[in-house]
Length: 123
Image (cartoon, rainbow, N blue to C red; front, side, top):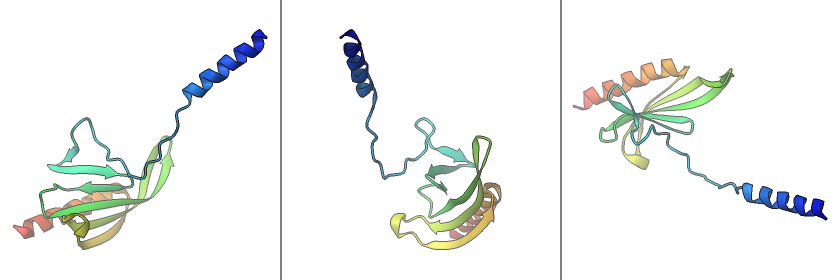
């Protein structure tokens, strides 16, 4: 009798510890505290497998899509990255330039150049 009461008590404790999973379809924006990351004076925001680079009040923004990645120990390293220079008009944004590079370093190099060039020509 005591054994049955003990197992019932354990089962009740297990039931209360289990939390139901929430279904979320929205991708979370990664922030550091209350601020977004800044890199060379422009905002850097990651949403899922996309990285947005540029200020929201400027007419152009660069998007980096991380297509392929490989695992190196406990890190995920991007192999193939698609770079897109777009107008910054929300959902109605237009694609200006697009390229593909191996690795995030090479992609950032060309993406930052395109963004600086587009912003300079817009002045």
